[in-house]
Length: 339
Image 1 (spheres, rainbow, N blue to C red):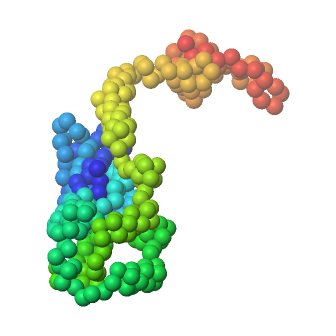
Image 2: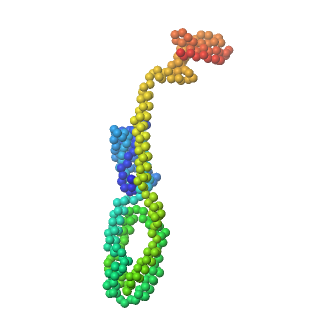
Image 3: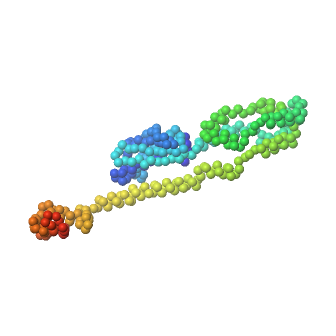
C-alpha cells in the first residue's frame, strides 16, 4: 500500500522498441521524473537499479522520498539516453495518513485519560468526594444550581455540523500532533478548585445533570460509521488490484517469451525463394516481374514498326511481352509471360 508522505520503492519497465524486448543493463542511462498531483519534478534519487536481468528483463526500481509521495496521485516516468528505449510510466494513488503516527497520538491521549475515574457519574465516586465537598463553604443547593444554570445558559455548545467542519480540518498526523501539544490538561489542583464551587449536591442531582448531558450528545450512527469505513481500502479491493496487476504482468511476460520471439524466428526462416516467389502484382511473382523487366530492357524485339510488337527473353526462346499497338505506337493489348 502506498502511503502519502512515506518513502517507497517502485518498479518500472524499459522497452526496447527496436528489438521488441525488455531492455536489460540500461539503469545508468535512465533519467526519472515524478509528477505530484499533475506537477512534474525530477526524482531526487536518480540511482535506478535493475531488478533481475535474467528473470525480469526490462524491470528497474527507483526510490521515491517522502516529499515525492506528498500527493494524492503520483506519476513516475522518465527517459533513456539509449536509442529506441521507452520508459513505461507508472501511476500511484496514495492512502491518506501515517498509521504509526496515528497510533502514537492515540497512545498519548490514552496516557492522559488513564488518570480519570472510570465512571465519574457513579454514586460511589460521588460519595468518595463528599468529604472534600463538606469542607466547602455553606452555599445552598439553590445557589449552586443558580450558578450552574447561569453557566449552562451562557455555554454555546457546538452543533454536530460545526464539529464535523472542525474535524475535517484535521487531515494530517502533524495537525493532530500540534493539537495534542497545545492541549493544556487540568491539574489535580485545578480540578479541586473547580469542585470548590459545589456544595451539598446529592447523587440524584449529579446523575440528573449527567443524564441531561448524555441526552444532548449526538454520536455518529452506524450508517455514518459504515460510510466512513467504506472509504478505506479494503482487503477485497486490494485483491482486485493484485489480480489486475498479475494479468498485466502475465501479458507482458507472454510478449517477451512467446509472441515476439516467435514472430522474429519466422522472419529469420525466410529463404530467397520465399521472397522472390511472393505475388507482387495480380498473379505475377517477384521472380516473374524481373524476367519481364529484363526482356523489355535488354531482350530482342520483333515486329518493330508493325501493329504487333514483341519483347523476347534473353535466350530468345519465347515472347515475354506481346503487345498490339495502334498507328501512333500506343499499346492496345498486352500478353505477359514471366514463366
